[in-house]
Length: 366
Image (cartoon, rainbow, N blue to C red; front, side, top):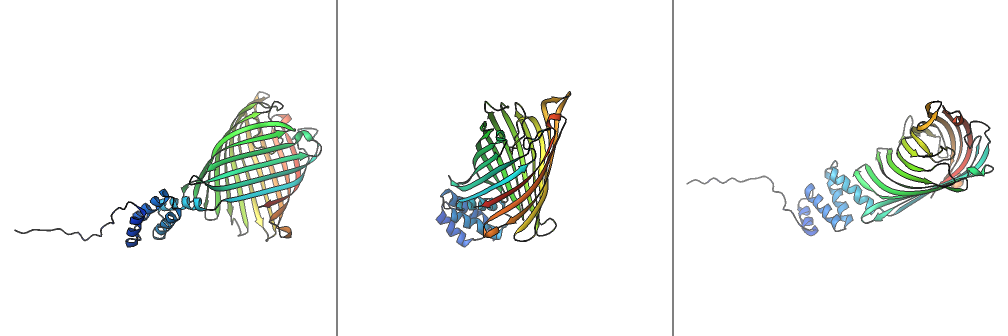
């Protein structure tokens, strides 16, 4: 009788382990095994031993740099392990405006003191990195006190890594504003922001919806809006010292009441659909001086307001130029001189206006 025995010489896969100690012993014998390292990383995350998980993801990426699961795991753990971070940007300035009320006739010029601040905090909570953003803005006019404006908002949400280069930040927020020295509106909102980077280019997009309730002294009532805004910052356009910034948006607004467009609030009351973009080309001459030229353009189509039998339609164009001196007196700040011309062309004669303003501001980041 002849017996035939088949013997396989293929390398055997390591047995599946159930805890970190067993996994670690197997990884010592098979350090390049992607499956073992992924299992180890997942188990380490479950036990809250994030530095061990990070090391496992790093081992995978050394041998398999394109492994998507390891890339996403590495980015997620890296964010959680990052220490809490806080940034604060403050800008204050003086501005002269030839037509701050945006009137079609009998415009009255005025000077305004303005200030704004943005505070961003990121920290870990419940094994997830969270971002909180607070915005403050104010305008105080020398003569036309009924144009005084103030705004405050806060939003908070967790950060999720969708790909190695793109993160999603869903958030909820609230805002409050005063205008003409009385309550202007109260707002609640929710949205999601996607932000990413590729080489030296950064980009983001935000979809947000909100509900506003205007005060009893306001000419508007209440309503909802939906806002889709994106941003792109790209360096090295023509030279290593230049860059462009572009911010397009699409907005639907269903806030009832009289339309007003007299402050920095991008969500002007009224029922309309709006398409717009702000783009700037910047050039840095040296460590202290930079300049920028650009424009804001928007097209606004009203759904309820009619003028001479046709729906109201506004086209707004605002070219701008600025010059900035960076780090004067060795401070981490910039002094900016800016000029802007505003022109709103409307089929409603009362909403057709033009204006210009000159501003000098000081900005600093902490």
